[in-house]
Length: 210
Image (cartoon, rainbow, N blue to C red; front, side, top):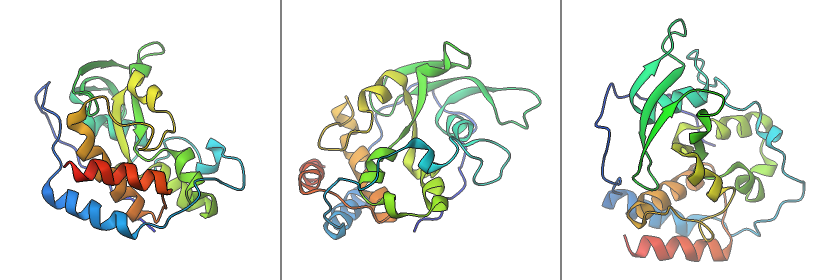
């Protein structure tokens, strides 16, 4: 089972960037890892509840900051941090959405925070149906806060994805497909999650084009 690693933060970066590119090494690793994933039904015995994965945005690495703000500080550029929070709470910043390449201005607030959301690359409900149902509470909490499985993204994009698997949803930008699928498989491999036959075919199809 995976061990959640601390996040690394860059001090600054340009406000716009091309879509991330999957390295040939990452793609080859994903192809090899995919062959070793167990084939499962994709159906759970018990009903999924978000609470099964613990408190949202838990400070699992005990750095004094909740996971949401950790990810915002990692993924946003030109961040403005709130005084008196030990550099934790992000008040504003710029996101170059990894799934569309579009620039999104983030401002913390009741009506504005939702414009940038934190996506679980492998959705929690999806993970529940593919093996997480049988994990311990602590394992599910760790998965929900694993930075390797988290991406800041535009709220509308995150909402369109929901808990869809790779056979149902891929990033709007085709240029992001290889990175998305390579990272997706890496998380499945790290956490010993399985895939259905249809999902395996969808992942193989994308990786074959990378």
